Length: 247
Picture (cartoon, one colour):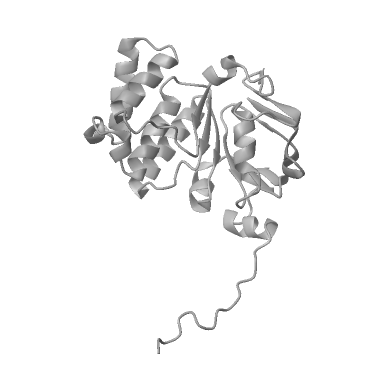
């Protein structure tokens, strides 16, 4: 469902994504992990057609990301880092607009909007303008926009950030059911415990390269232990003044 071949992106002399290759079959929940600056968001932007590769290519639902086609964008759902909301539209208006943009008729858009508002505990905020929403409400609204047209592939950038534990469990359950029906999820997150519970495939990137690519059955210790074995952990300098009694 997602296939990368020597995908590379440079910004001037800086190589953000360096010659990465991997294949993600349908029905997978793939956790794409790494420290800040590892190339996660750049890769996500290329896979969703928002950023052209410098070299190499990737296929998503059989379509080349380098071509940047509208057809590709119709077949994916994206939860972007900036959420992509309009402050002067309500939560409900965002869903109604998104459904119609993706070609759903009015009745289907209304029905799916109501279901998503209920499942994501947004019914109480359906008439609230996005500019007045909490961070968690904004995140859930953007997620609802990503799934309303029932795409075969979801790309989610930090879906568990700024949300409460109950909502995180709800989202996790929704994604598990989506994958069980053959959908594919490609997500980034720094919350390793959530990824360990949810993902079936793990790709750790560091310095723009793939440091490790494995499936759940190959995880023989905690994800956190493996992560820090692969990622250089900076030493913590002791600040002698920090925590000392105030004079």
